[in-house]
Image 1: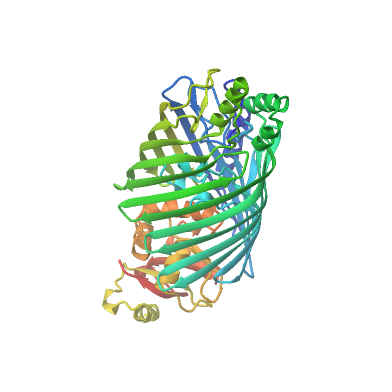
Image 2: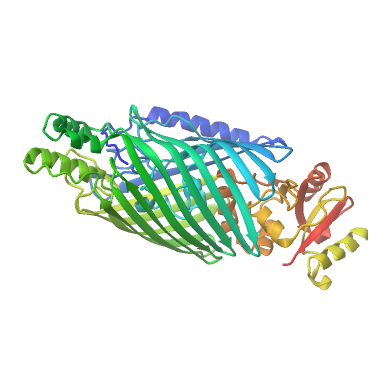
Length: 410
Length: 143
């Protein structure tokens, strides 16, 4: 999902300054002797991204705000602090606060995880509270860049569903069959995604995941579905919506934005994490009846470890299956043109090839440098947003992206 | 002498030829007074990879790590087959996704010993040569 607003560069330096203060506090607390009962830990990424084009900036749809800055520090940068407390009788609590730019451009710290876990049997856990909505194989660690090989998860796949929170309950049931671990994870709850002055919502989310670990192999299958609300509020939507509602095609406006959507998500993934090689691949699909296109995406990633240095290569693709609407407004050409622009700006289809290297420079820090060559589909904006007022310029474009990040885990 | 004997017994239970339980082999240890009686290599690997937080009988276990260094790396490599880079990435994933509590990191062998003796639900690892009074070997990890 996308929402494009144009902001002056450097609009949230003040917020980032607060994060530096937060980080300093954490660094101090980490050097204090840890209590026996409370554990404090943290992670952070400082990332910088630039595209090879002056009129396009990288845009993590539904995740970060768009930026006109030539070098964008907000796309990947994040700070997280976590506390854990273990009680007797198989109960523990986890709370994690993260600060990163959200889609509304705010860097307010927010609760990413806050749950109580009950372990009635060694192979069964019940968790209540705020967890991560586990739509994809790496959903749980989507902000933990230190745990991942890439600078950020492939947007062609992970951009299909930007909702991260699951406010509700999940059950983790583990079956050990010989050397094969099978994990069954049903979950239910709801999820909110903050847009500028608005909230998108998965209101009754149900899902089931199966994960299998065998030696260095992992396999993942997941399905989820939910009614959803998606109130677009960006300039393109607002203009098209207003024009439609004054035209004979007022009903088309109801297909673009509102509270009556229904979406299904499916994902399958595999990983092979050997000593020398890491291979992972994932396919995911989003089927929505309105407001956002139905689309699917995949990636293949191969990394080779040479001690602390690991070059990696990734191929990724997202394809739009069905546009938000197929309404024919050609009787009123300006209206059709407006609708086409709206549809194009919601379509994130593209293909990309990425070459990168991860260097574990320290036991708590990894440096990553990544070059992506993306080819945006015709009639799409891909993973980019215009950095100028020429907003028709992204379709069918080839854009290079250079990303550099330092990931910490402490 | 007694700890040496127990070590040999533990090695037998672990299915390793006793002759391989050399002084610098890593052993998983707990306090003699601990209720933890046995641990299999599979259980130990899952605990130290953060994939489980309890033993088969649902006893929750506090894990203790040695300070970063060659001995710690050697232990993880022998127990899980994973190199230090993989282990660190894995633990950051397990911890920050709320799956497992990070192992408590002892500053030294002495601190590890103190912690094991003061918390009967805890397990740690050390070179077999470091075993002293009050500790009981549970499992020998080959090199």
